Length: 180
Image (tube, rainbow, N blue to C red; front, side, top):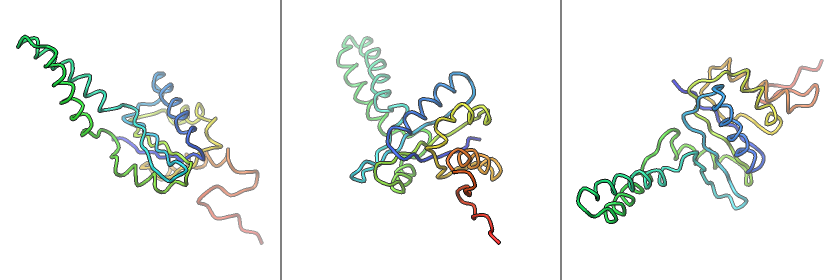
């Protein structure tokens, strides 16, 4: 079973940098992601999703290949390639793998203008090593939502809070210390 983690950032570019960092960690087998989508909300309030894989382009490439192959069989590879590319692009545009786009757009509306978020669907990871290697983003990140266990989510929030809070400040989502 996969876990969803959504982390918000104060600007549009940091989520892209964080996703690139996670991709590097995936190449080192420290994390296995099913999907990683950057959500941006521009200064006009428009929400845009930046998928890791462009399904429309992937569908067009695959359709072109299969269309050309079928076209070769019927002695007209150009028409086959064009028809295959069109069919593949339509198929790719209608395909939604990973995290549901409608849900991500709703998350995007909760961001302030100019902010971004990174939504990651994690199949498995070595949590302590991933957090340590992604430490450059701790001071900039805040957890919006996860499907992690309460204990694991609390550790994630604590890791981000220790980097962002000044000494003596309460971590987010926790009451301030009692003063007596």
